[in-house]
Image (cartoon, rainbow over all chains, first blue to last red; front, side, top):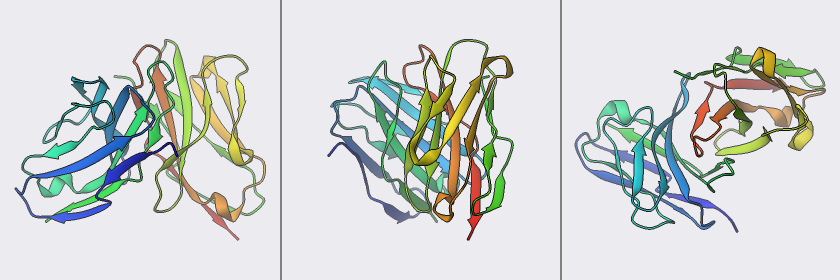
Length: 112
Length: 114
């Protein structure tokens, strides 16, 4: 089954404790991205990657890092999480040239 | 900067009422347009999309949208809503050539009363 898988689905952590949210897709898509969803703000892009070893900042990259060592994986790293990063995070993938995005199930992160 | 506006934050309808959700974007070039739906507690799912051709696009579950280039609009419609359509709806725009970078509106929450 074609899918985008995020882990964990729910995470509560403390300020400053590094964490990683994983994202994996099995559709051989080149393009992957991370969004955060906040009430009243919709989805805002954090980072995106057009292929292996090619990443770039989205609209709200501050406080986040990503890597793309393999085509299928695109982890989101919070080196020192802060409470304003409490949000619902979505990973998405799409093939280049066909912009329909497939979304993961979401990760609800709470930073206390 | 390019932006996508969804005019209604929250829409409340009774079952069988007709629905129209507005979406406008600010970009003069070629765009690809999408509507996504997010049911409570779930991820975003594609409802319909427009790349080119007939500006009236039909999607899943009886939804349709009309692209009006002169108005920079891509409004979503459904003739008769059901309780199961209760969800949040997001309009999204991809600038042609941006290789998949979607710009989302802030979303419209639809509540359908049984």
